[in-house]
Image 1 (cartoon, rainbow, N blue to C red):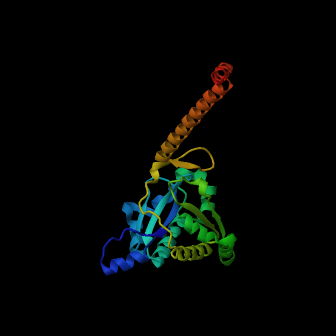
Image 2 (cartoon, helix red, strand yellow):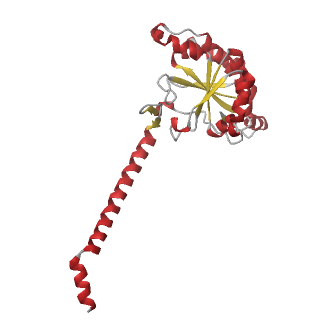
Image 3 (cartoon, helix red, strand yellow):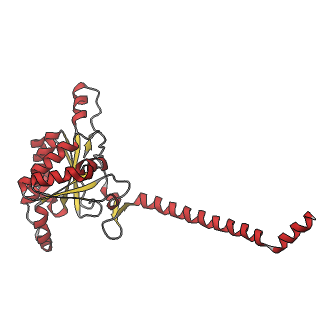
Amino acid sequence: MGRGDRYDSDDGYDSKRRRSVYIVKLLCPYYNAGAIIGKGGDRIKDVKDKSGCAIEISRHEARFPGTEERVITIEGTEKELQEACRLLNERIRDDDTPSSSKSLDEDHEKRRKMCRILVCDSSMAMIIGRGGNNIRDLKRDHCVQINTSKRHETPRSLDERIVSIEGEDRDVDRCLDEIISQICTDERARMRFNVDYGDFYNRGQGGRSYSRRSMSRERNRRSYSRERRSYSRERRGRYEGRRRSPTRSRSRSRSRS
């Protein structure tokens, strides 16, 4: 979540709105996306109309790195965000597992009791609090479980981490409202509205993911480092060889005499 940057007018109303507009991102299981969008987009349009938010959903193949979930990006004021998240979470909970994904029944039941949002690093620090005080208070006050992803679990070029809230529906909604209120006070939060998650792909286990561009940079960096090390070893070898050469030592002694 972060402050929005899509309102660029110099008009007084827009300038005032720009200061109070934020971005929050929800994760949605790919098999529930249809319940969010609706036939011809009628359901997502209904959420937009009721909440007043701008909402975008990532493409089917564009899922958040290390997960099988699509990203719902929401932009609006604090109250608008809270309303939109509540409506979207209701649709995720009420949707049945599609017949083509019956093997996911058990995971789906667990997922229905959970809300997953994306936050930037500075907001994550705020949610956790010094010594974990804030996240402990949230768990205690709302009777929920909260888990956060680690920084190394997402690509370096993507400043977004997952916060998972699990519990009874009403408790989860209240906890999410408080988290949104807290993060809307984060002056350092900067989340992009338009992110092409299709540029990222999974590599290895544990959900570590990298973008194609960052992987290319990393390969070039490692190749350059290997060349530097090889060149340094070669120069050091030549230097040590000259120092230890007996012929060279004798020639130096003769010249001195």
